[in-house]
Structures are given as structure tokens and as C-alpha cells.
Image (tube, rainbow, N blue to C red):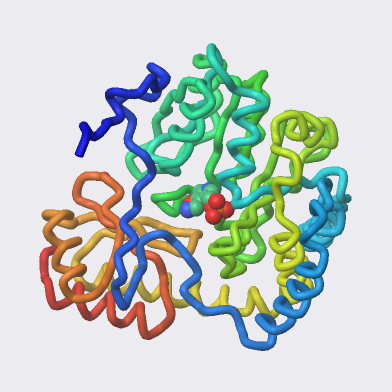
Length: 363
Ligand code: PMP
């Protein structure tokens, strides 16, 4: 055998040297509550409806798909409401790809992206992947951000892109629309509100979609991975000004959304009511997690998402391992004294809570 080449031997970009790839463990445990998926399978009737459409699309896969994914964009516009039309919609293979398109179009060498840490772990990686520099701002001790402080931090940094995660991952923290407005006023760059978990927020809370009109530098990104139980299909999307969408066309690969993906997503959106029926149950399990964690002596943070970050964990690595040994996978997000758990089905949630109760390591 010849010498095995390592990363160090390759002419890798200098700015990528020493970075670690995204790496949430994919362990085959019975109860996987570590990457904020919707753990409910999609209902049988919807699955067969989607399959019918995929079968039709399959007959044409000798041809490239609709590069403009027009029907899918119309479906997203209908789903989002707020008077949106297809020319204000963009989509990609997961909202990660949509965010990458934004970083490609508006970031790049010499440019910066900014977010309030701790926040979604892919923001720095997507930023760095495009040669842009990531700058982490600060939150209050309870992970909230106030409009004045947010605006001051953004004004001081003058970032090309601001990424506002609402509600925030990994903390679950809600973000007021007054913060979005203040950040938009304070910046000259692009402002993205990542509403990946918006469907889990209280129903009467307005989305940042209500702020789109008259704000051409604002984009609201969403995903089908969470509320729609469609993580494996890889479908994310955003709403913004038509000119903003034109900018993303400059960087996307031609035909980036496969015909099968488009067919599956259109069919799933047609069944939105059934697909979203699980959301209320997940919210119920989330609130049950919060209440039980408190009773066990942990310190859960307020969450408007499908997961709960909780403090008061004496040794997160040991508790993570003890849960793992009991067949439950949660996430150590690297915040001292904390772990994060996704709200699963009632049975999965019970398995997590029972396993945790049997460990007894709250401070
Ligand atoms: N934004 C946030 C805040 C997320 O937590 C995630 C997934 N964990 C994503 C975007 C990306 O999701 P996807 O690429 O599956 O749409």
C-alpha cells in the first residue's frame, strides 16, 4: 500500500484549513432526538399521493426539470399567503442551500456575515464556504436580543449579511419583529430571517413575512424539513423581493431542483393541512418536556420551536452518554451545562424523560 494522502497534503484553500465539517452524529438508536427532525412519519394517504406524482415525473426524467420550478414556487406562494406571488419565491435542496445561495450572491472574500451567537451552527460554515468572514454577535444571558442592542451591534459591524434565526436554534428563543425592523434600519446589507421553526411558534404570532413589503434587502427563509416532516426530501425556500430572487439565479446551478424533488414537494404542499396536523401534537410534547425538566430540577429555556435547550446539566458529556446508553440520542450543542432535545412522538418523549429521570444529574 502506498502512502495515504491526508487533507494536509492537498492544495486546500488556506481559509478552509483547520475547519471541522458539520457532524451531528447519525447513530442508529431507537429514539433519535438530536437534529430537530419531525419524528412523525408522513401519513399513508399523503405518501401514496406523493408517490403518484413522483411516478408521473419519473416518466420525464430523460429531460432536465423545469429550471424555474414554477409550479413549486406557486405552491409555496399559496402556502405562505401574505399576498405573495411566485416571482417572490425561491427554493433549494434544503434551506441550507437557499442560505448558501444568499452567501454566494451577497457574501464572498472581503465580505462578512453576522449573527447573534449561539445560533444555527451552519451559519459560520456556509459563510466560510463562500470565502466570507463570520462575525458572532452577543445575546442577553437568557439568549434574547433587544432591538436597541441588536441595532447597535449591527451598526458597529456593518455586515454584508445578517442572519436572524427566529425562533433561534439551538436555544428555541423567540425573536420580536421589532428586532428585525431595527436591524434592517441599522444595516445596509442583506437581512435574512430564518423561520425554519416558525410553524411551532404560537399561532397568533406574526411572521417576518409581514415586514417584506418595501424592504428589498429582507428575505424570509423556511424549510419543509421540520413541520412538514420532509427532511429527507431536502426542500427549503424563501420569500423576498423579485430583484433579490434574480440575484440568487446568478449563483444557482442550472436545474438544481430535481424533477422528483419538485413533484414530491408540490404534492406534499397540496396536502399541507394533513402534513401539518402533527404540529400541535409536537408542541404539546415540547411543553411537556419543559414542564417535566423543570420538575426534575433542570432549567429549560423558553422555546417556540420543536426542541428544548435545558441548563442545569452538571456534566453534559456524561449525561449525553448515559442517555445514549439507554437508546436515546440528544444533542450536546457545546453550551456549558446544557443539552438540547427534540420533541418526538409521545412515546419517544416519554422514553427520553424516563431515561433522564433515571440518570439524576441535575445540579
Ligand atoms: N435553519 C435552521 C435554523 C435549522 O435548524 C436548520 C436545520 N437544522 C436549517 C436551517 C436547515 O434545514 P434544511 O436544510 O433541512 O432545510
